[in-house]
Image (cartoon, rainbow, N blue to C red; front, side, top):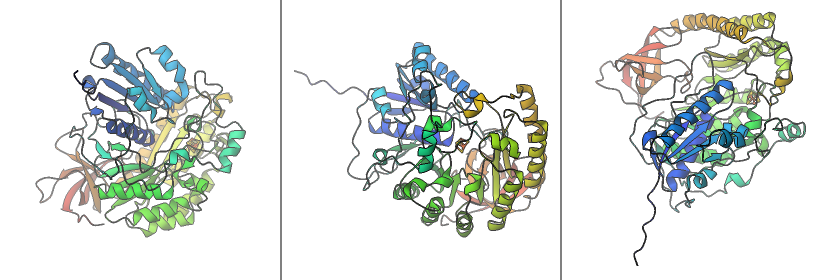
Length: 537
Ligand code: SF4
């Protein structure tokens, strides 16, 4: 009798769309697949199993998700792929519809069931090895298509070209002394109250499950990092309890819940021990971090703890809710040299009337006081925000108020979204729709103003000596390298183009250099390298 050999490991291709939070979900799913024996490939035409991790935040993101699914489906009908799996936010919204309308799709995996990727791929979960096995380069495949630089016109990163096809770095099986978090979902009284008030209802979404996601990964979950080796995201919380009337993210992602403090710290330590030098903490609203765990000023405490990890050069967080920026948080940012002087606080609008209808409150006057407080506490901090134009009922006077606010606030980075009318959002029922053409012309008007503000501000950078993280050859021309300063978040803000290596023959991607800014453009600047920086912070 011959012993049958085990089936060969399937080859999996992964496309990750949407925001960094979705990217972390992709990295977790890739980690699970890798640990179960799958082989990840950067080439969809080589894959036997294709996974598309989708976004459905707004209309354009949904369209991009559907287009990508259809593109991947072609590899199934006329290529090597035998299975197509759709994961992510689109599944939370159109679970039944996806398989009904796109028969090539074999399985769907929602944001709250990442571990189901294994069953969907026909793999058996593999228990974590007893000994820690930190990072290994799994593949030296370089990104053929890096995620597109986000335009100044929006803060929501979305790229059908795939964030999953970068060099993968494996983070797995860190010593899990702590119980898995997935079994202990937490919630805040605010979230429970909002749930009773109907905030998270999906009744109007035909084909969606009524169950809200509760999943949270932890430090024992395998992850396959797809960001450049020196930088990594850590998701510190999931979901959102805020009532913003234009937003369906809470319906897609569930109630706000924080990862345990020690779990985040353990993950950060493991990342740094394995070469990561820049950590970006992410969540829908990081400033609520720890409230469900009974922590006061939880984000400040977490930043303070992680900033003490030796060799961590840059630490930042995205995103801040404006009325939750405490003195303690600012004091923590100011105190640590390795916490980036950078704050992204999406304000959404400046007209009190619009903000009231958005169920966010406040207005230009209050925001200016907040910005003053931030700048006084953290000199030279770079501020980013995003706005929505064309919200139902937005008048020309509202746009003027926003314009005056932008002119006065002088943000370093700014994005403007066109309002997207989303079924399931509270704003869906509002009258006073603004025609699409008017929305677009309002957006252009605001971006033109920001362009002139940014151009003047960037001129002031010329002559400054700054630390630059070299990221690699420019996607636009091999004659230039690209990099970032602490004032640029990954993949979001303008670029530093490096056209002069100084005395160096070559630069190393993922290394920090002292550089002088020599030229400024509307959003980008040009730099010349002075010298490599010491590895120690
Ligand atoms: S804070 Fe508001 S806009 Fe942001 S995710 Fe929560 S509900 Fe949406």
